[in-house]
Length: 277
Image (cartoon, rainbow, N blue to C red; front, side, top):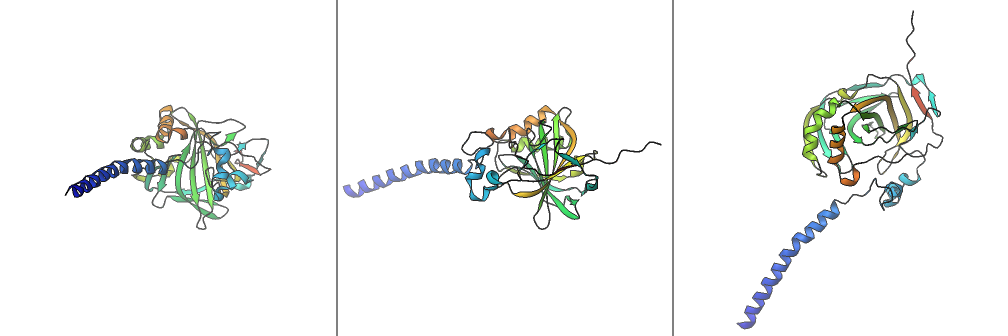
């Protein structure tokens, strides 16, 4: 009986130890799962200068010769009126807002319309924000950049970039503010936001830059058609801080450093001036 009682006691002790260990193991796994694969902090092991070394499929980040973002310097830009006005037909659609850790994304779950470039339709899939801007104009960096990501039926990408500086609040972001607070500091958190109309983002301005580049986050896939609207919009300081504070601490400044232009063509579309009679 003594040995049996001893075995029972030992079994109980082992069970208690295992029970205590499980939460610690679970916490460690969860922490590992939420480690960011890449960082925007220069000098970090997974910082921008090392993105191309983290995974084989990210090699373009380090070795590609058509990478984004770039400086849109006027001494490199060629006026191409044949580009024409931006041909977009957006529509309101059901959407969700997602905290991806490195940025905040609005994903369209329905048909939000398209942008036509060279006869090909690129469908609006999602939009997200970077601060400060990733692209610069004549070396000037603004406070925020919105990327409207489009995709064709054969999975080719086209991105429209809008630049912002601190000033008056942005009407589109005003509608997003309650949802931004809901997903703040909660990586992978997703919330339905109902019907969102991307037409509220359209600029009345018609001047834009166009060049071939890449995604600005890993895997840095090249062959992306970039359109950067020249007119600068405004965003309130509160809205900018709300976007920054919603993501992981080391992603508050989530702008990739400028990449080499490598003799790429940079075009600008500007309509003919109105004639005066």
